[in-house]
Length: 438
Ligand code: ASP
Image (cartoon, rainbow, N blue to C red):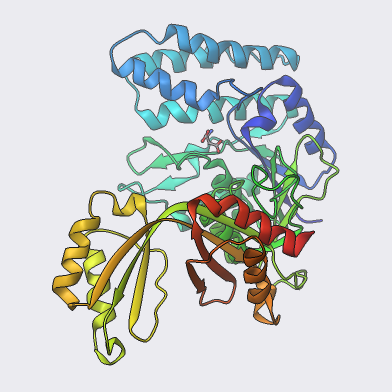
């Protein structure tokens, strides 16, 4: 059979009880040969994540104070896990070394990475598997840019020498030998790198939910779970705010079409969500796959008679945004109108200057900025072939008396984007959800 690479998130390894679930998942299938752990996460709401405590220790040490009190919390979490698992191994020595290094002024990334490092050693001990230090096989260049190809060869070679191994997530090393981490949640990326290098048939990403929800559960009560989603759909949904998987985790596996299965450590029997190649035959033609959105955007609309005959109009408009360092999200156009949608965060402190610069550059009849806009993306690979999807989205919104301020259909026909007032955001998502899923 093929190889399965597994990644376990922080809540899956938050204490010894969770570790035991992980161990039994790994032992239940001999194809699960490589495990990528995160650092211990929260055991209950309000609890500390080990990574956050490590960042705190670094800040305290940088301020020249003693980390002992905060490090104690870290020490006791790991010591408990090792004891309750009944290991012969004790992480005590490693912990003391790390504590000394932090106090001596080790760099921030090294400090943050120790959560995964220690969890990797403990998990390897508990399983009787080999431990591969990610710093030996995952590389970044001198500018901190991830070296995908160098890493791929090094990981592939290393895996061929270790039939069963644990590789901690989240970090690697720079050309100068120092530790470098990915951005927060980056263990998902490590899992994807290992899956690619190992030629895995499946990348299992174990977390505390049974997959991606069609819509945010804080807005829609008990939303359906997405069974199958393509890499591209997922990219759209993650970009628009759906979280579960780090958005950069798709790239290593999508190159070679390895599917990702989001699974729940607390309910391993649940099928979870399969993330597959856009070309995969497994992909059933669903209509709407997911609904996601974000608040706080502004639309800047320019009007000018005969705009459509004026060559270079669009370029000049976008040049203004570029010069002010603002990246835009959407650009719906009409014959004599053009709108540019950007987040309030991007426009912060620059809006008035941009409006003035636009007036100078393209001499519009009018230019106005309207804020308080929320953007919702209705994503579905089946929409290309289906008639009437947009109609259903707009009917659902009009039934709830929600005014649509902006419409944009992604050029891939993978999504329909609608803009509504911030205050109507939740109601709009619920209305669209009910139209397609209830
Ligand atoms: N432990 C790191 C974080 O909290 C990385 C991860 O969990 O993937 O962001």
